Length: 292
Image 1 (cartoon, one colour):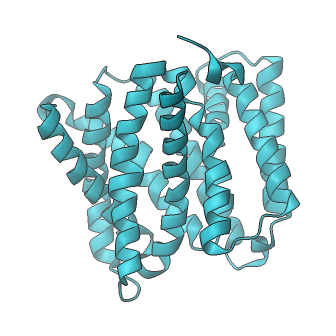
Image 2 (cartoon, rainbow, N blue to C red):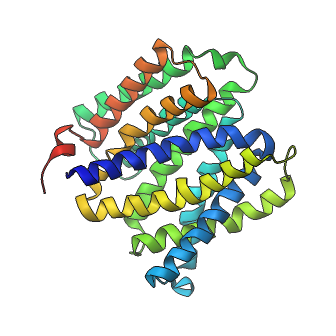
């Protein structure tokens, strides 16, 4: 992987890691539905502008059902669940739970699609579950009311990404940018009514407005463009390295900007989760530096 693409990978991880910071900032004022409705709205508008510039078509008439399904399972539902989790949990904990998505994908593949259960995958599942247990069991946030439900919501959000992985593998072939763009409009169709019903919880400050804008434009729109560029340049397997880097930035941003404490359980739990994810996905560190 070239230095330029390593830089893109680090930037993508930093952006996606920051999404949990922005969610934590904005969710107390907007609530989960309105926050994520705003996120997908700005993302859809931004990607529409990019589509016009790049002359990319959605072919909505042929693909609208696919966009709605993908928008629900890969955006609307997990976004809502993470936002609900953020009402109690720290950005650090959310970012590590997000990294369990490949582990959920492996479990779904084994249970429903008869994928083989190798020794390394089994070890990865055990390590991943152990890491989550360490993270949650020793985190002081667990004493807060509703903490267990928030953890379940965040874990379910990661599970949604695992389901979405299997769905996209078996769904009709659609160009990647169209998938990203169309699914944002599909997600908006579901989130907008909920956002209008819920409404803001408090007055919207400039910081909250900027956090929503950053979530939509940067953490979703720009991030997708970076992601697809990396897939084109280095392939999907190496691009998945970002899964292991997002928690590093999620913990870093939470500590720097929200004053979140990074205890021993955060380090050990995150290490166990990421090692488990590496075993489940068959990732090897040498892949990051392999030449193409």
